[in-house]
Amino acid sequence: MTESDPFLHRAASYLRTAPEPGWDAISAKVRAAVHAASLPGWPIRASRDLGHGVVYISDHALRSLLARELRRKFVCQPTRIAFTLEGNVLRAIDIDVTGSYGTQLRELGDDIRRTVIDTVRLILDDLDDDGRTPSGPIDVTISDVVDGDPLG
Image (cartoon, rainbow, N blue to C red; front, side):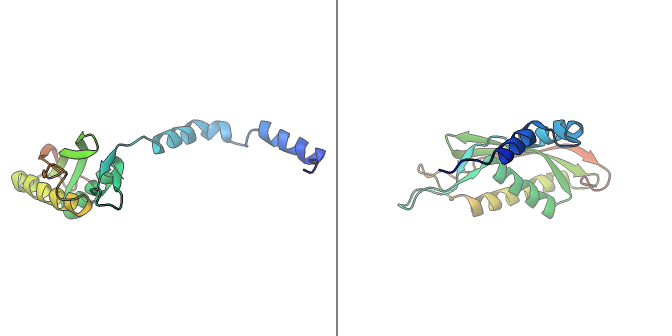
């Protein structure tokens, strides 16, 4: 083992104690962003074990995929997507949506439900070990209606 250079040791000690210029002004925002990015998630089983292991998707990833697909296909803004899990098996999905004035809301809800079913079936196995569909009931609530595009 080699001896450390005393100059490098002093420089490293100083750099550890000296704050980055401007850090005081942004530290609260940076720390909040780090904490928000590291939210713990729940694993949702995406495949059955057929001898090759089990694949999981996080609830955050599935929620993001569903929200993106709904915004892409419809003039709406998903405001809440909640999952009911039994262990790590998806049993139900509850979605709140802001729609656009003039939209046929019943049809929008039905279209959203079909899109969610199709999307979930692409990601998760169609049947769980008990033979039930993992998506279970999908409840869609139009919680608000706005003029124009809810995203804009």
